[in-house]
Image (tube, rainbow, N blue to C red; front, side):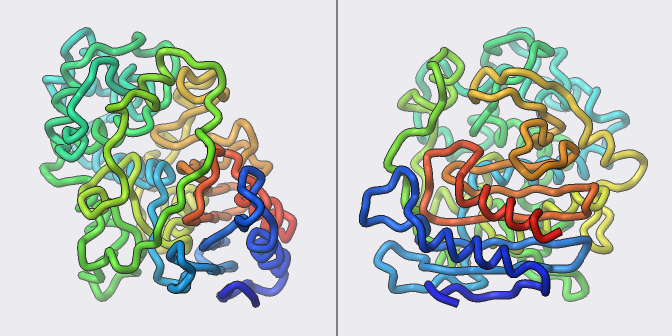
Length: 391
């Protein structure tokens, strides 16, 4: 293998390795002539509980002095959301009856302000709460105060009525679900993820370790790859008030990438992990809510409630028709392979994960050179096509 590419492919999956190597050999469509398509990346896939692909390659850093290895962590941005949503599902079924139909205000009374008293947990998780950002300015530092920003959202009027379709919440979604879990369980979402699903710190020697974090401890920061941002803005289509509010105001996001960003919990955007870890977590969506022997969201119809359609139509923020389940996208556009029952999500710059329940297949792609594509990064699409071609 070349370009520091190493890892494993099971017999019959050699075409995935070829596609992975091709990503390093070809230019990115938007890049300057001197830029290669990849700097560093990882791709992994599971069938049932068998790891059939686990590839890494390239470099952690811009200067190409530090090779990308199997334990390199990288932020996956919105690919974090379904992992957070899985954690939400696990917790709310432990505390509430028919939880997706429960009004958010039942467990978070302050959320009822400005006519939001009927917004359900299911609507909030499927980006229907009408809170994709802040129309009026906020102090950027508020993004680093999870409860403070949640309070601000609770006291913000929705931009459209609940039940009238989705408008993607790129960052605010994470603060909404984090506050919900805090109100329901008394613990943070990242803590519940670590303690009950990932065992990322290895605290339980009897359980599998999944190297993924929402709230990455300082002691892990040396493993995190540099991010090279895209040279063009995202392709959002015709501008409207929802897209501007979600993405383009001066106060629409915190400063990303520093120690504070890595350490705090933002369940919408700052999960850090390896491709293997992301693919393993998304295997819950391929296996009825189970990861190995861990029955995360598989009991009493939990997975069917989690995965069913909650809205479908033209999104107000993203320039696509989207079908949302409870915090994950259903594959109506066939971005994540041919199966419309697949659950998947992409992250800013190109990362993605998916779980195909018909094939018991999950996969994830992570990288540190970002493109400006919101969902259809050509590198990820090449790998998905190669993977399905091997089945």
